[in-house]
Length: 190
Image (tube, helix red, strand yellow):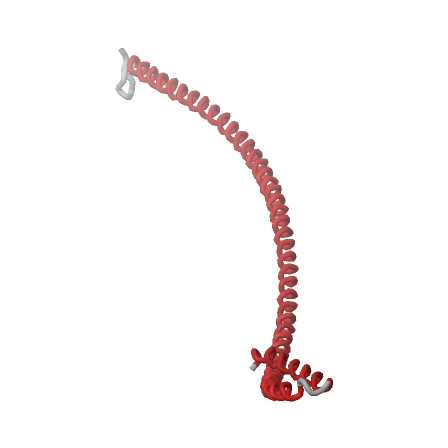
């Protein structure tokens, strides 16, 4: 066995070289594994990037769809709102017309009320005038009835005196009986 300058035998050197070759082989194996993993990761990265791009496109499509949906819904809601607004405007116009009609009716009622008040005052004045005239007439009727009672008494006396004397006397007696009958009828008005 020969020893070398470094104090190792060739056998030790061979063994050391084998070990180093084995380590190099292991490192090469690990390097190949790492390269394979790197290649797989690169493929996975490319696939992920492709998937990411696909998802971006899908998100963009969904955003457009959402915008269109919102726009369509907004248009539908806007149209529904416009319909409601138109209906409300129509109702408001109807209510305004009804209010104007009611105001005109109120004005007409107020005018009629004023006329009725005037007519009532005129009627009350007429009733007072009639009451006064009737009171005056009643006073005169009472005076006439009272006068008739006096005449009736005088007619009784005169009828007895002139009844049998002449034709004229009989007529006068008849007239005096008529006065007496009138005085009887006038008694309730006294």
